[in-house]
Length: 129
Picture 1 (cartoon, rainbow, N blue to C red):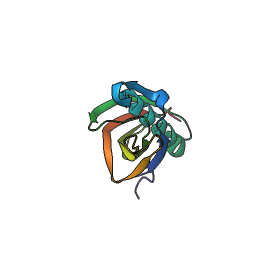
Picture 2 (cartoon, rainbow, N blue to C red):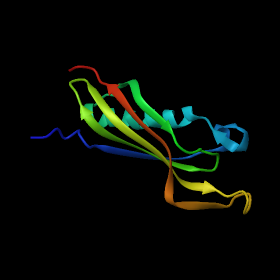
Picture 3 (cartoon, helix red, strand yellow):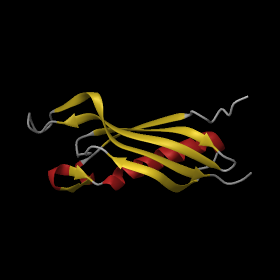
């Protein structure tokens, strides 16, 4: 019988406000995306183990495309390995909507397909019971 935690997917969506912009061109720093991964990992730990857990490490992080103020970011995490106290999670952050200031101050569009901005694999740990 398989472990029901393996393959669990959690998805969060978040609007990226101007307050998160850190660099010229309304760019957001990579730490913003990693913080979103942390939120997803927390929900995964709550769902799998009834505890918020702790982030232990990233084994890989790839920054593939920019995240900007005015974007809607969809962040997902999938449990890919379950240890006794550890859970390995594959993360993806994709821009699903983007502001279009070239068309007007509040113009925006849905991106089809979404733009994958960050991919990562990380490990969380939960307390032993």
